[in-house]
Amino acid sequence: MERYFQQEIECASREEIVAIQNKKLVEQVKHVWDNVPYYRKKMEEKGVKPEDIKSIDDLHKLPFLSKADLRDAYPYGLVGVPLKDCVRIQSTSGTTGKRVVAFYTQADIDLWEECCARAIVAAGGTNEDVCQVSYGYGLFTGGPGLNGGSHKVGCLTVPTSSGNTERQIMFIQDLSTTILCCTPSYAAYLGETMKEMGLTPEQIPLKAGIFGAEAWSEEMRHNIEETMGIKAYDIYGLTELSGPGVAFECSAQTGMHINEDHFIAEIINPETEEVLPDGEWGELVFTAVDKKAFPMMRYRTRDICKLSREKCSCGRTHVKMEKPRGRSDDMLIIRGVNVFPSQIETVLLEHGYQANYQIIVGRVNNTDTLDVHVEMTPEMFTDNVGEITKRQNELVAGLKSMLGLKAKVTLVAPKSITRSEGKAVRVIDNRKI
Image (cartoon, rainbow, N blue to C red):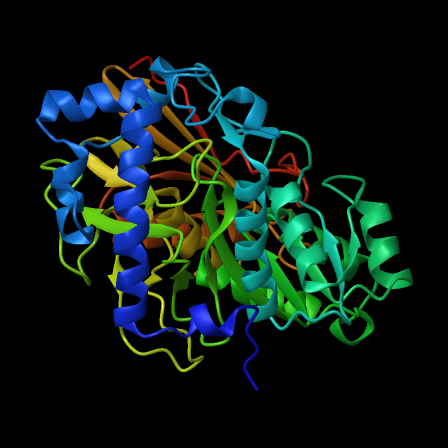
């Protein structure tokens, strides 16, 4: 039987959801106009006033916010309440320029944790579960978000944070952990390590995993599920909006339900900024309608996905977003071809490889080069040069079929690619562009 954390809102009618969104949007636009001069200036430049926004039908009139705006307004330029009313910051793990610093009132944190609680319950969590949170804690939103959500559900919460794999597995076994929360790449690593220790899925007490913060494929999901004997659920979020819990998978696993009472989603053409209808692929844009400390309006996520309003067997009525196909800013353009790392991962997993690989892009004589280093599994490992060459050629052909361009594939020994306990470093772009 499907369980819900807040059934009344999670299963509300479309009319009820729209009424909530209309009311909250009008209030939020007024709040931002009055308290965030940076965004008020953007509205003035576009000729928009608060009274022009009467419902979600007027959302398209508002200006966008982007990562560039967050850098320009760093650190306090987008804060919507007095600092004395803020109780916490969280920050992105960004590798370039200024980090995104998001602010929270206590009410903002409560709403965020409720969203995470919805995700845990959708994955089968109850107050009888042991929930091990192996996302990083600190500035990264993963640990604090799922930790708070787990508390709200009433789970016994094990705040292990990331890393120290031996201790992670010890706690899973000794405490009979039933729900694991971490990045999918770390889940794969934990599963791989448990398998090497001789643990079978039947000997692993876990029943579910909630994995997010990085892209992962369906093939990777199935590998994790088989190794650990669990059902693996996707969760989506951004620090700019709060963190994990913006959207989550239910038992149907046909997309992630967006918590529409807190976040209004749009899909736009990333080039023209035109709003696209449901069912079309484009860039995901979010408006946080009740986050007061850091009220993101029409924030461009750069994630490429599509929305679906088809009736869900779980009973939830909130719109679903498909797993992002990639990011418009993570997309690699190699010899004029758009390449997403997820496409390469799909080919590798289809050929029986684990999700441990690295993509190295370079440039020789003004021509892009694409090298893919792939770990063999222990079962595949061989020093037979002919066999290795044959397998490499199979992957070259598979990648050419998927991408439309030729890559150089190098098979490497098991565990020779550095493991990540946070977000996996998949791409190294050595081009000076």
